Length: 451
Image 1 (cartoon, rainbow, N blue to C red):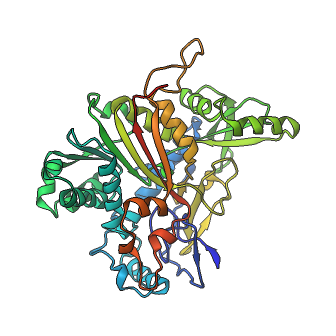
Image 2: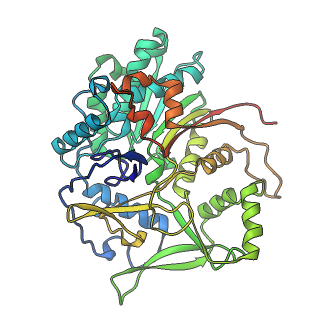
Image 3: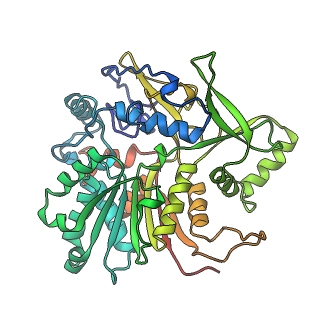
């Protein structure tokens, strides 16, 4: 049995769910797909002035003309019909089916909620119904709704399994930055006519505070499936563990086509807030690291999920009574980029996938995706709710509500809330439970208990 990695990005690729997913696969080889080579000048990614690493990553991924996702296939992968796992003999038959699906769809990409429809979304809907306050109308926001498969699956499940009044009075809002995906979502949900009156798409950036209107005072749910891994991160550097952090910027040098790093004293407020959370004094791991670093000082690099922090700050500001359910990658194999919480930077050249050893090599031709530190995610969630913020005099704030949180492996989540029998093959192999070894679910609900 070998550690198997497949084509990059948060999409499912033949023969497996992406090289981000750790899986034990026997002797299967990945056929090379059509090459998509991109040679973009560095001047098209950043201008003459240095930019923070998060801004460089955002451009490399999302720039309308030169970003990775703009260069990718314009259509998101959508299966014509659900896979009948119970009719497959086992792993080998499943792999053969995946290869066939991807050959037919060329370079379209699929998410787990698409490949395991409707069961993946049904598990999420069940988790919401068990946890939500059903005395008020159910309101759900989804950040980055993809093809709309999650929205339709959740609406289907609530229509069939919840009291009629819950379905009739609910609303489902997709916050989607891509106009083309927004259109696909509407088409997907419209397959069931009664869903249309309950569903709408708001085409905007969820992390932009100005895009949200009034503060939502009613309880609601927020769903984020594989959103965190592609959110921009910042990078900080220090000469040793006892030296102060410096923020890292990316710059063009006139004499070279290559990009380089520039180090400056910390100034950016978002980076400072993120470091405050990472180095919270009650963290026992940080205390042990501090003792060790004084004995053996060396340079250090740390990747900070500032994009996640910004999004959580916005959500807690505008949706103070939200409950959150998020899923993403807790670990990425074979990462070559240095630094704590470093990303996997992966591309396809000459039809085959390969990884870069530096994020600076990504010039619109590579996916940059990060593992999620779920323990840190929990701390950021508490911080953004107001519980762990400090007053100007340094004393802990008693504002906000402490969150009740739970982190589960994907297999544990689906065992608890899903229908595992629906994704099991004849010989007992279950790809949904067996092959997502490096993914987790995070659930967070508000509470008035602040003691």
